[in-house]
Length: 199
Ligand SMILES: [Zn+2]
Image (cartoon, rainbow, N blue to C red):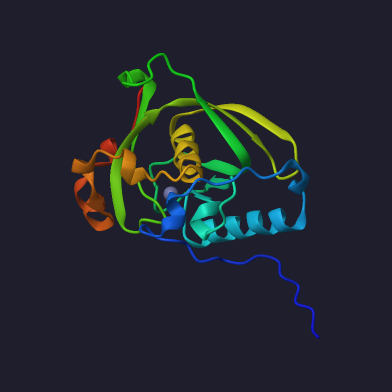
C-alpha cells in the first residue's frame, strides 16, 4: 500500500444555509496543541483562506466545529482598503472589547466596514464593531497569545470569532447596506468602505 504524504489541502467552504455554520464550536483540548490533527487543520485553513483571497477563515467554515481560526491580509484584492495583517493562528480565542461605550458604540469606539465572508459569497454589508479588543488565545505551538488589536484587525478577529459561536456578519450588518460585490465596487465610495472611529 502506497503511503500518501499529505501536506496541505484546500478544503470545501460551507455556505450560508449549512446548519454547521450556526452551531457553537468546541474548545480544543490543551493535549491536542502541537498534535498532527490540529496542525493539519491549521495548515488546511491557511491554504483554503489564501486560495479564496479571504482575510480570515474559521474551522466551522470547513465543517470542523473546533475553536480555531486563522487571519492574514496581504494586499488583498477583496479588501484593497485594508492594512496588511501578518498570518496569525488563534486557538480557543477569547475577545474582550476595550471601549468606553458598549451596547451603543460611540463613533470614536467603532470601526465600520463593509464586510464580506467566504461562506456568503458575493455579498457585502456594513457592520459596526468595537474598534479595540483584547485577544487572548493559544498559538499552534501552545504559546499563550495576549495582545490588544485595533482598527481593521480588531474587526477581522471579531468576524472570525463570531463564526466559532455560530454568528455570521449578516446577523450584525445594517441590512439596508447589503450589496453584491460588483455593486459595492460600483457604488460604495472608497471613503465609506472602512470607517475607523479615530482614524
Ligand atoms: Zn466569515
